[in-house]
Amino acid sequence: NFGADFAFINSKLTGSFDYYLKTTTDILVNPPTLSVTGYGASSWINGATMKNRGWEAVLTYADKVGEVGFSISANAYRNVNEFTYIVPEAVGAYPGNGNDQIILGRPLNSFYGHVVEGIFQNQSEVDAAAVQPGKGIGRLQYKDVNNDGRIDADDRDWIGVNEPDITLGLNTRLEWKNFDLSMFWNSEIGREISSSTKMYSHFFGFFGGQNYGTAVLDAWSPTNTTSTIPAITAADLNNENRFSTYFVENTSYAKLQSVVLGFDLPKKICDLTFINSARMYFQGENLWIIDLPGNTFTGFDPKSPNVNFPLPTSFTLGFNFTF
Image 1 (cartoon, one colour):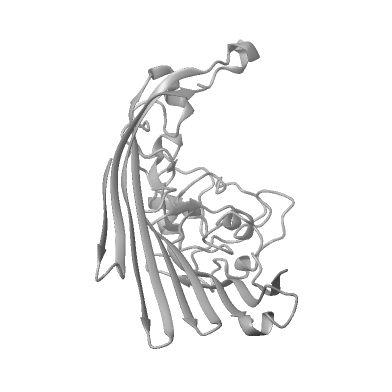
Image 2 (image 1 turned 135 degrees about the vertical axis):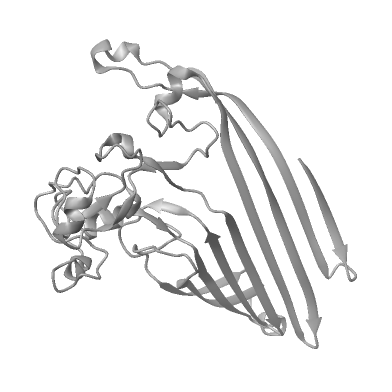
């Protein structure tokens, strides 16, 4: 790796940039084994080599205008990884079909599944489509990837990567006399996730034991043909709980993670008491989320996409005393 640190304008503007290349060899892998061979057949082997490359950058500007001091610090990070070697017996430990579609040359967190082309709107579309057990009007239509006229496991494809293209952060701080105000933003762009929230909220009883989401109220019906949610059914004859692009969502977001407003008690007042210093602050967390272009996320919080309950917005009033 190599990097550079820099400072300009009498060190008011500072920053750093780092670029790295890393190859990890002999990664431990536990290949899948047939159940009939018994528990003792399972073993760990040195089965893979992975290459990582990426960069990190930080840029900070700090200055003062009159009695107001301020600082702005931004950071960005990007990492790309891929498998460059896998021993044949370890191929089945990663996504793919173990044959002509393996993870070699792809990122670790790659998704492999079926491709949804839409919802069957009429009987003519159903009749013209490839053989798909359970297909029907209002049901998801899967792509015949290998063009053999039938939808089965061989029609799976690479459908996403659970890693962001870029991760961003922004810290700002203002100071005026005894007051200070700080704010923190973070962002991920291009990350794709497998939405467990969608699995439990867009279907009626496929997975068992869940509360049905309000999304099913907008499910496809003869009077609601523009919906992207398949028609309600209690029998999954079309095997729509199979992993597919229907469950892959883009979480691109910018989030106002926290804001803190503080006040330090003037020293001359502290000197009149037995307190060395005192500070009061008001803090808010999980305040605001902005969906960026490309976002298709239907869960609660794109930063923690598979937490299946809302993360609360919280406010804290605090006091710090030093004696």
